[in-house]
Length: 230
Image (cartoon, rainbow, N blue to C red; front, side):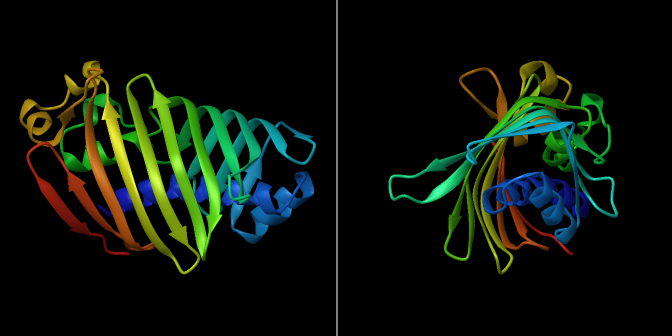
C-alpha cells in the first residue's frame, strides 16, 4: 500500500499547496517564490489576475521537486470566496487534469483491491473537471466537496489537514459500468457498491499522521483497516 499512500496524498497536498500559494501571495513572482520554498515546480503558459480575487492559468503544471509526480491541467481557475462568517477561501476549478508520474496502467490492470484504490491516480485517466472549495481553519485547512469527474473514473474528497501534519478525510472512488465490467467479478461483487446512476463505488477513510495515515476501506461486503508504513 505504500505506493498508494503516495498517490492518494500527493494530489491533495499539491492542490492544497497551490491553492494557498494563490490565497496568501498574489501574482506570478509570489507563485514562483512559494513554489521554491515548498519544493514544488510550478509552471504555466499564462496567468491572468483579475482584481486580486480571480486567477486564470493556462497549461498549469505542478511537480514535486526530486520526483516526477504532480499534475497538469489545461486550464485552472482560482476565485477568492467568502463564507457567511466572513472567512475567505478559494474556489478551484481545474479542467482537463491529468496526474503525472503515477504510472500509466490501463483499466485492464484492475485486478485487486490495491489497484482499485490507486486507479484514480493513474496517468491513464483524464479528469474533465476538478472542483473544490478550500478554507483556512484553526491550525490547518479544510477541503470541501473536491470532485474530480472523468469519463470512466471519478472521485470525491472532503476533510481537513492540520499544520501539525494530521489528516482526517473521506474519499469515494466511482467506476463507470464499462470499466467495472473489466474488474474480476468476485472482486467487484465484494468491494464495489451499486449507485443509482449505474456507477459503482468504493469508500476510503484516511486518518492520522500525514506521512503515515491509516486507511479504512469500506466495500460492499467488508471493512478493512490498513496501517501504512512511512
